[in-house]
Every structure is written in C-alpha cells, then in structure tokens.
Image (cartoon, rainbow, N blue to C red; front, side):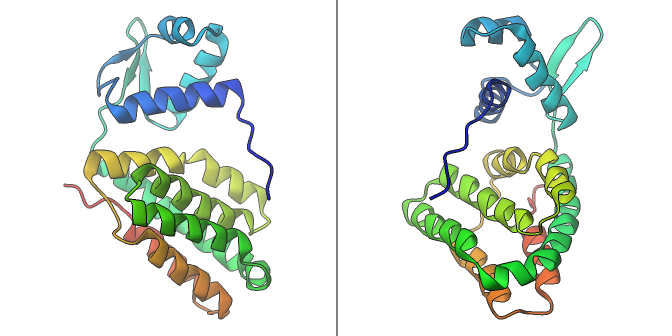
Length: 208
C-alpha cells in the first residue's frame, strides 16, 4: 500500500480556503482576509500568503492594490476553459503511459474500485477525490515530470469540485466511465490517447 500523502502547511491552508470558497463561506466578490485566516488557523501569515498566491495563479481569487484579496466571480465559461487544456495534456500522457499501463494497471484499478463504492453511496466528495486520483495516476504513469507538474498546476481537483458543486455537472457512473479507460489501456487500443481526450472533454460542465 502506498504511504499516506503528507501535505505541507501551505497545502493544508490552501485546501481550507478552497473548501470555504466551494462551500460558500466566501462568496464571489467577497474579501478574504489574510490575517483573519492566520488567526483562525493559529499559523503565521506567511503560509497563508503563499496559499493565496497559489490560488491567484489558479484564477480562483484576485487581488488589487488597496482592495485586498477577493474571490473571483467565476462563470461557466471560466470553468469550461480548463477542459481543452487538460484534455490535451492527458492525451499526451496517455500515449506516453500506454506501454507502462499495459503491464500494470493496478493503480488505476484501485481508483475505479473506490469510485464504485463512491457511486453506490452517492458520495460526491469521494467521487471528486477518486476521479482526480485516477487521472493523476494516469499522468504520473507517463514518466514525464514536466507533464505531471503542468497538470498539477491546473488545480484539477479544485476545478472538478467547483464544476460539480456550482454548476451541477455530474457524471452518473464515474466507475463505469473510468473502467472503460482502463480497458482501452488493457487491450492496447491504438486510439487510447484520443479516447482519454474525449473522456476528459465529456466531463466538461454544460452550464450556460
């Protein structure tokens, strides 16, 4: 079994802020006070500032001189923009990963099993986590660290959660769709890259 992932303080703070944005604690246009978060979490302002900087790069928040940091007013179009970029990255990753995954699909199959449980229980949080984990394992299998870093920098988990919770984007059978990707690798489908691209694009939000 893989060792548990130890998240840095900055990452934990970033998750705290993201959860607040997704849950509606901080609404679009509302100010996020750095000092307030540091006080609430009993940490210094430095890691809070670092977390906010990352979220600004991810376009979830925005800052302006003398106005502080605020939650961006995101539209369906903002959420949709990430999917073509992600689909292109994952197409390349799938093509690079195919020889390796053909021999060992255990990491992907483990996430599909967890998705089956999440589907059965209607656990949206688990569906997001294991969908993202599946795709992360796929990209990791490419063996290309630049590709993985670029994919990670998109903040896939955040955008997936926002798409589902804000726009109601929701696949009915997560496990079934991801099992189809596993089978494409298993049979050494020459179109596996294109199939993965189509799969990602099919996840895009359909908001107006």
